[in-house]
Length: 191
Image (tube, rainbow, N blue to C red; front, side, top):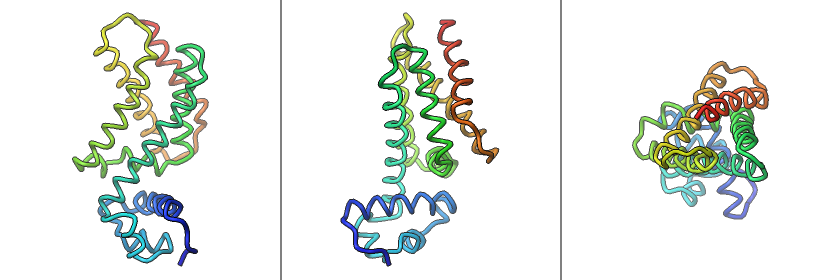
């Protein structure tokens, strides 16, 4: 059994371990027993923090999604122009994927999209990423079109990441970011 931790630290520890468990077995293949055992806690301790496996999984999706959004926001905050914001945003995204394939698979894997409640969490995260991206598209177009293009840029990063994760090989996130951001920036400049 794990040593006694403050509630917030225990919750974070459970979420960290749950990521590994759910990444390995999927939502339906993993049980609360699996998570409790991997975390070194009893099921009653686990249920003190999460009322159900569904609540735990949803909290994990929110946590992982927020980590991605924070990484991108932090990386782009100091950029001085659209081109550097584009490259820094893609670099943060691909570094996040490179550092944690399991987190990416949790957010964008088939098990998440097939559940309406989980899909809504992913849609919110995608929308927030697009909301952060839209102001970087500095062209004279209506706001709805700008948001569509922002979603396209988010999809570009997700699609490239799916391919990289499926290959299972290590990849240089900075090199991929440079190439994908050059592609995206060329497209944006063409507008």
